[in-house]
Image (cartoon, rainbow, N blue to C red; front, side, top):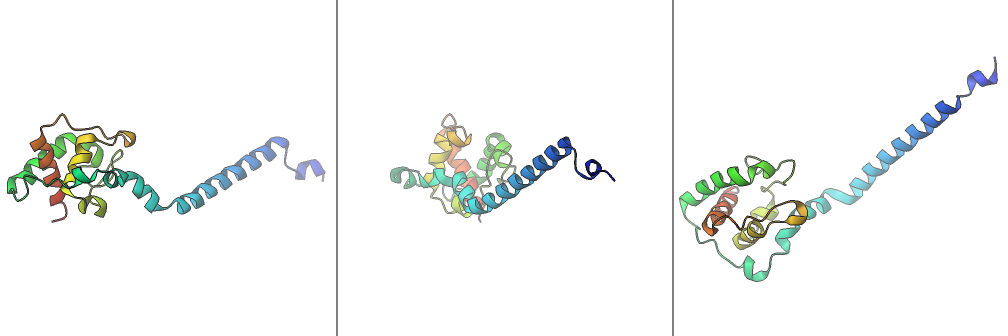
Length: 147
């Protein structure tokens, strides 16, 4: 038996080394993702709420207590927001879930501010072109999600 027939050929060696490096890269990415943590990813999605100015956060929803506001807001949400955030605000390919505690505990003024100004760095357009009442209706819908 020849030694050459037992040892891998150069191309096979390169392939084995590349496969091993790929495996290590995937393993390291997985370990790094664990270190990165869901909480850090979560903070990236909802950081805009934490950056809302105090004055804007203090605004109250003028439609609070209006039973029709949430229903109207749902229709507006489906028309303008569901493409990214999902039909029931559960999250989609481009927008995070709006059922999370960060959103549900956010002040109405904070939601209104983010809706009005968008989160351009995260791909969310500003919706300031919608009449103010319609934006408050969407806020009413978002608040109704935790009822």
